[in-house]
Image (tube, helix red, strand yellow):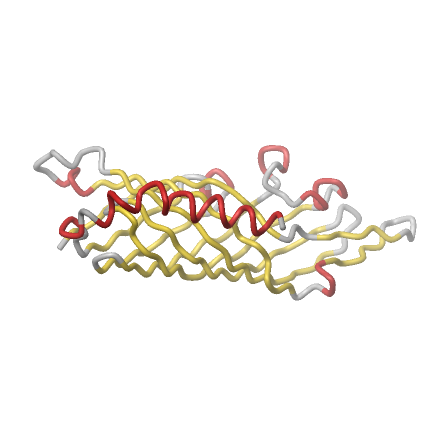
Amino acid sequence: MNYFLKVVFFVTIPIFFFARRGFAQEAQFNNQKSITFGLVQPLLGGFNITYTQQYRRFLFAYSHGTMLNLNRFDGIFKSRSARNLNIDQITYISTGFDLGYRILPDLSIRGEWKWHLNDLHHPDGEKIQYQTITVGPSVYYQAFPFKKKESILKSFTAEFSIRWWPVVYSSLDNYSYDFTNSLGKTEVFTHDKGDLFFALSIGWTIKN
């Protein structure tokens, strides 16, 4: 039920709020392509690049992120279980694609499919890798703060997004793994089954 309510809030509310205005501005939906770079990922020691192709109201995007050290900033980006067990967590790869629909020229709703390769390192030495696949909705807004400039800055893009990524597949049985600590006791790691988060990217957009 919680997952359902999140979908309703983050996808249908923007549709109802902007639909009338958006459908009245069909001529403003230019074809365009963007390349953007995530601003959060470098803070975690990695990077993320996204290519987005928009054709009138429809769009396709591919993104690739790598080497995200989730242990930084006191582990606030780690899963709850990893924090509780003091397990180091790194996302080596997070990659996938989006399919979306533009409600307004700069506002879109999307469905996102992502594949993630994760590494866990228990403080007593045991290491494992596991994979997850997430499929979920998102809302994106593109801003062009220098659009009135007659220079290369005109294409500068700031992209804000709200994403909800529920896990639909995990290579771990029952989403969990049993670590054995130095005392021979079992410590159960269970990864989160979904994440809701905000993101900010910057880059460039070419409009046809």
